[in-house]
Image (cartoon, rainbow, N blue to C red; front, side, top):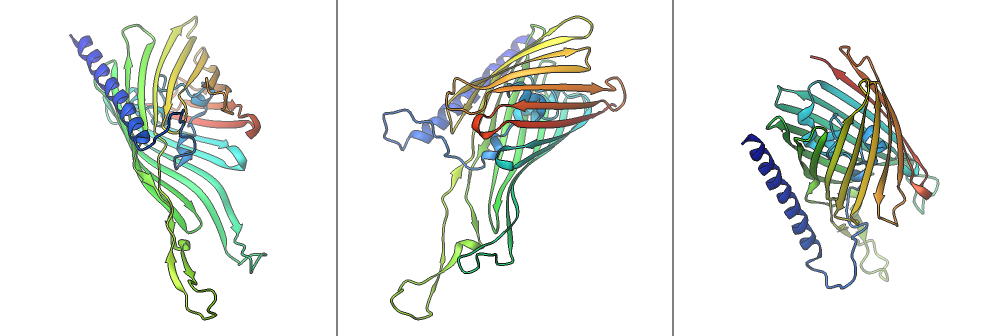
Length: 355
């Protein structure tokens, strides 16, 4: 009876997620009269929200909707937080594309056996301390500008049954360049189900479900001369307006299977179907070999069936020290291929605090 209730709940929520997908597509294309194929590439704001978090997840090709079982799951599927039994933190760094720096911090705290809360911070640094130059002052005005993106999330996850959990994340999002900034809000939803077949799990999530972003700031206020033939000093203050763009909605549905091997070793395979609002549907896949609970070797592939994508092969390794102690420490590395955009290296440090 309990099993039927668990399965029914998961099917209802999974169907609800698919309904959101269908409705979002209808809204995106309802106003278009076009008979060709539309991929909506480059049509969203806050593209940094599409950068995955956590070296382990990236090394597994980003196929993490059903495998998420550490604090970085708040990015991939907040429902995975419900399985965490120890408080923990994760610090992530990547030398991202075009000489930018990507940082991700996450912390989770179990309240009891069923409820877990977490906080995560994502920062992408584009430009720092660049001189402001004008036509009149090409050597610089003495001012400096920068550009960065930031997202702050608060997550709550609850384990409803021994095999089923759900999670929700509320996000504050900000993009900034010099005196202009765009602020928005979004939420992530996730469900996770551990089937009766030992080692088989299913997960699904919706990320960045929210409104639109629009840049605004004092630099958009300019003096405008509506009569340039009249050499007077009369000018009008004009407020320029920028377009607003939607957030990059991402729907993930995944499956993973863990098989126990010899001497506390195991192998895990996972596959995710990715449905973004601003690109084509793709598959991510990964495999992880864990030896004696201390060493993990990982490989994956991102964006399968997207011939135009620059990213693809991913590799990684993880080392866990003091696994039975009070402060287990994990160090992870991920390498991902990005074609002409150069390869990306990521590093993560995870620390758990035993009860």
